Image: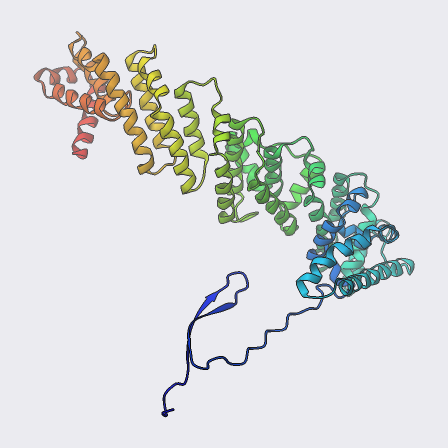
Length: 530
C-alpha cells in the first residue's frame, strides 16, 4: 500500500433519536476492512428509584403509591400522605394482602425496564416497605410523633423546625389531626384550621404550610376529593369553572364584576372551598394552585363534553372559561398552555355530531348561520377557524338558505337588511379575509338577485318621495348598512352619486343638515376608495 492512501472507507449517516436523545448510526457505504471493535454500551443504572424510607415521602413516590393502592385508600378515605404518616393505617395495610399485591404490580414493569429478575425487585421493595413501616411504628411507640392538637400546631412546628426529620414528624402530627374527618371537605377544613394556626416565624411558617400543602394537593388531585369540595352534582363545565375560580380567585372575581357572561357560568364557592380560595389568593400553596391548574388543562383536552346535551351552553362555558383563564394567566397557567388546551377543545366543537346537536331541527336557515358564526367566534387555532368557515360556507351557499331568503314572506328591504347583518357578523367572527370573503360575496350575490327581482332601487327612484329621503336610503344601501355589500351596494352608490350631482340636490340638501352631513361623509369615503 502506498504511503498516504487509505486502506478502507466507510460513509455513515447520524440520526438523532428525539426520545432517547442519542445518535443512531446508519452505514451508507463501506469498502475495505473497516469493522472495528464495538464500543461498549453504557451500563444502565439498575439501582432502584427508592432506596430508603425517606424516598417514599417524595411527591413522585406518593403519586405512585396513590395509584397502586387507590382502592385501599378510597375505602379508608385517606391520602398517600396520611398512609405514610399514620401508624393505624400502616398496621392495617401490613395485615392485608393489598401491600403484597401493590409490590407485585410495581415490580414487574420495574424489572423489565431495568433488566432484573422480578423476584429480586420484589425483595428490594418489600425490604424498603418494611423499613418504612418499622420506622413509623417505632417512632409512634417511643412517643416521637407529635400531637399537634394537644401541643398546638404553631408550637409543634417551632419546636421541630431544626430537626432533620421535621417534615416527617410534623406530617405525622398533621395526619393524626385530620384522621377523624368524615369527608374530604372536612379534611380540607381541618387542614385550613391548621394553616390558620401556623406560626408567624418565617422559617417555621414556611415549613408548616409546606407540610399542609401535601395532603391538600392529594385531595384535589382525586375526583372524589374535588367533587366533595366543589359539589358532586356539577357537570364538567361547571366543575372546570369552579376550579378556575378556586385557583385564580382574585383575578376571576374581578372579571366577574365586569363581565356578565362570566358571572353567569361561575358557580359560587362556599364553605371550605371559599376558605381555600382565599388562601390560594396569597403567596402560599403554590403546588395546590398548580395541581388545580393541571387538572383544568387535563379535563379541557379530554373528550368529555362540558355540557352534555346542551351544545349552546357548551360554547358559552368555553368562552367564559377562556376569558377567566386568560385573566388569571401567569398566576395559574401560562398563555401558551391555555391556547393549546382551547385549540384542542375547539376541534371537538367542529365534529359533525356536535354541529348537528348545536343546530338542532327547529331553526331557520338564517338562524343556523347565526349560530355557526357564534361557534366560529369561539373556536381557537387557524385550522379550527378554517374548518368553521367551511361549515359556514356550506350553510350560506346551501339551497335551503337561498330559498328561504329569496322566497320568504319578508319585504325586500328586510331581506337585504338581514343579508347585511349576516355579512357584518361573518366579518367579526375572527376569520381571515380569505375565509370570510367568499361567504360575504355570496350574500352580496343573493342581495342582487332580490333587488333585481323586486326592482327596489328603480321603484325608489321613480317614487314621488323627497330627494333627501331617496339619498338617505341609497347611501345606507351603498355603505352596507341596510343591504349587503356587492352588486346592490354598487348600484345604490352609482345612483346616489348621480342624484347628488343634479342641480336640485343642492337646494334640497341645504334644507336638511342631517342628510347633508350624511352625503358629505359618503362622498369622502367614495373618493378615498377610488
